[in-house]
Amino acid sequence: GTSTLLAPSILSADFTELRSSIALAEKAGADWMHCDVMDGVFVPNISFGPFIVQAVAACTDTIIDTHLMITDPDRFIADFIKAGSHQITVHQEACPHLHRTVQYIKSLGAKAGVSINPATPVSVLESILPDLDLVLLMSVNPGFGGQKFIPSSLEKIAKLHAMRQEMNPDMVIAVDGGITEENAEAVVKAGADSLIAGTAFFKAADPVATAAKIKAFAR
Ligand code: DX5
Ligand code: ZN
Image 1 (cartoon, rainbow, N blue to C red):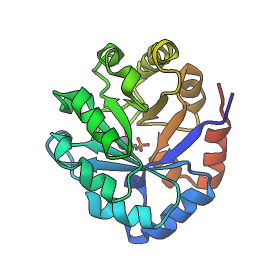
Image 2: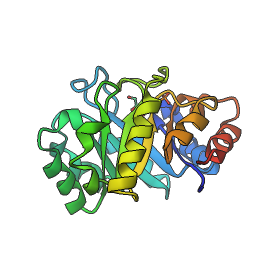
Image 3: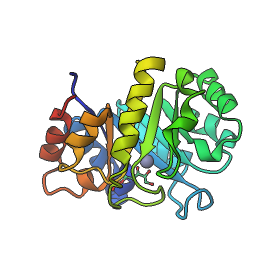
Image 4: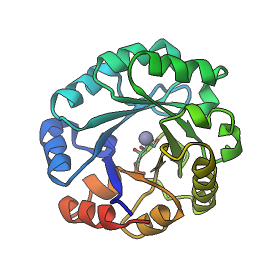
């Protein structure tokens, strides 16, 4: 198959050296820059908003992949697209009118993604799947970088992969949380196309070598 997409999560980057961190990610072959937005309500942590996403976008030509871990994301979707996001992912758990939210993202010209937490079954995506550009499957509970991959995520990836083959073969499956050089192959084999890596990339002794290994795994 084709090579795996790599999306470094800038949450684990050195923010005093944001431009050079992004340059390193680019040099390592990053396909997307993953921007983790946290509001202290939907998740127990606060990260950053459109202002930082705009700074990231100004430093790179790669795809800006924005992961909104926020309550009522509709309020801020336009701001994050103006800031340079090419892809906006919202949480199923935060969107009572998910279909409306997905159509809204698309109407503003961005790709639309939906994320689900570890306790949310992939079956909740059945009705919306044909409308999605990507699903971001959480393999940790969102809120923090550096957590351990939850092993039962592998079954969810495989189920989602089977669902998309039937309903929306062009949809991208991204997996987020606790990805390492050690588990990346199993994650890709289960059906993932894109791997989000915060700690494993930015805290690696040799981030370029780590990225090359992760990207080399293919289905
Ligand atoms: C978790 C974030 C993840 C996180 C990944 O709330 O959505 O994107 O930054 O970091 P690692 O790879 O360290 O688990
Ligand atoms: Zn994320």
